[in-house]
Structures are given as structure tokens and as C-alpha cells.
Figure 1: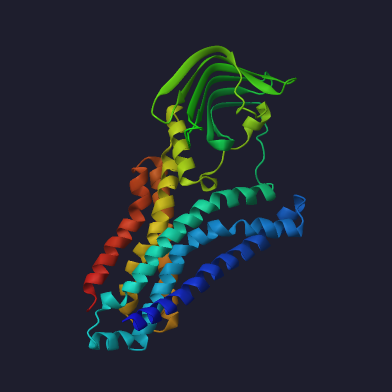
Figure 2: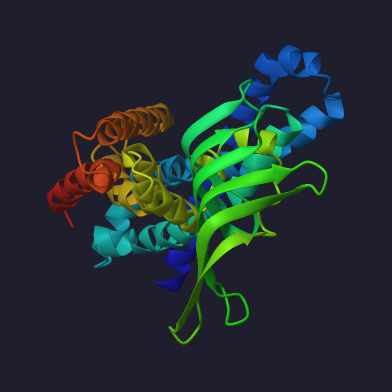
Length: 358
């Protein structure tokens, strides 16, 4: 059985790698061609444009991985059916489910790989936008009820920012602890003023709370204080916040918590956070769906296999977009909306698997 398992895995892996590399490269080439003139007009060199699209690869790899698993599964099972390998395996006492077990194990590994690549993608995406000069400060002098993500895990929740008067009002600064020597910290203040001479903010009428590693809390109130972490100038706080695709799962969680405390609607971002788990899991779900689907018409040829994979991918991605819109609008729980496509495809996969002659 080990020889057969290796044969199945080898066939699957070849198609998976070709799809996982081919689709992103084609997509990026098309996108780069369409946007070349615009990027050159921003003053970017051809080299900078190429490097920026290199940073786009992790995000595209993560998005394409469920489709790569689907194509690999459909083509592998389809080829085995076309060349009577499934029939031969059944004659030897091997069931269809046992024959395709290596594919499901490979798809499970793809789940972990998709999540890891997805967690690497935010930093690469942010770097891409930076190189392409796509992130610019808003042309205004005030901002209200917003959350700002700073470096080293700091999250600022601010009621109002007045750039002209160099003032902030109703502030909460939070940092998630990572170690005993880097404890969680929360600082609140009624207001803060920026000193253009000393280049720092002065907080007024506030309190500081430090949560130590053993659970103890140390807190105190202050009339005036300086928070070194608040190093941005007033105009810097006008910058657009990170998009969900620029944040890792843990960052999104802290961001959502901060938005909750400031009274903002978080439905859309909660859908995006749930999708960071649901999309990688789609690798396994789509494999369970694709294997029995491919065996229903094993002798139809490569064109039919490609059509099945492409149509399923389009339907799944359309379902994702519909679920995101429903979840963001509040018509459905964000987590349920994010997982709805997987649940529907899983139900269809179970139905197809039960119909397969083993």
C-alpha cells in the first residue's frame, strides 16, 4: 500500500505545485501590466515595481491554495479513474475512501501551510503598499472616534484629534504583554497636547494600569505624564489604519477589542478575522468535495476536470464574497457568515462521499 500511496501523493503534489505557482504568477503579471503606467507615474522605477509585486506573493499564495488543492484532487482522482486505477484498486480489496486517504492527509497539511502563509502575508502586503506609495495621509486636520495601531503592539483609541491645535481628547493606550519583563499596560487620559519644541506628547488627568505576569495589577493616577510609546506627530495619526489583510490574526483580535470599547461596529472586521481560519480550512473541505465529484465522471478527460475545478472555484469565491457582505451588514453572525461556504461545501461533500461506490 505504501507504493500506491506514494504514487497518489506524487501525482497530487505535481498538480498542486503547478497550480499554486502558476495561478499567482499569471494573476500578478496581469495586475502588473494593468497598473504599470500608474505606478511609473508615481515615480517608481521598474525594479521597485518588480520588488513590490514580489511582496504580493504570500497573500496570493494563501488565497490560491484552496483552489490548488481542488485542482490537484480533481485531476489526480480523475486520472486514476480514467486509467482504471480505481477499478484495479477495488479489485484488490482497496476501497475508494482508503485510496484517496493520502489526498486528504495532504490537504490537511495544506491547511496548516495556508494558515502560516496567511500569517506572513500581512507584513508583505504592508511592504508592497509602502513600495507602491499606495498609503497616503488623509488631507484633513481632524479625526474623530478612531483606533490607531502603532508599533510594538500598541493600540490607541482616541475620541478626537485636532491637528491644528496639536491636541487629543479622551484617550486610551493599550499594549498586550508578551513576557514578565514586558507586561500588559493600559493608560487613559482626558487629553494630550503635543510640544513642537520637544517633539513629544504630554498627557493630562489620567491613570495607568500595569498587569504583571502573576496577575497582580499596579495602578496610579496622574495629573501630567509623558508616554514614550506615543511618538507619532499629530499629522501621523491621520494616516489610514491598517487594512484587515495587513494584520495577523492576533492583531485583528486586539483591534476588534479596541473598536468594541470605542463603540464602533466590528462586523466586517470580525468576518475578515474568521476568514483567516475558514479559508485555510477550505483546503480540507474542498478536497473532500472534489474527490467524489471527480470520480462521478472519470472518463470525461482533462478538459472536464479543468472545468469542474474552475467552476467550483468560481462558485466558492462568489459564495465567500456574498457571505462577507451578509456578515458585514449584520444580517448574520460574522463567524457564521465566514464559515457558511465551508459548511455548505462540507454538506455537499458528505452527500457525494456517501454516493460513491466503495
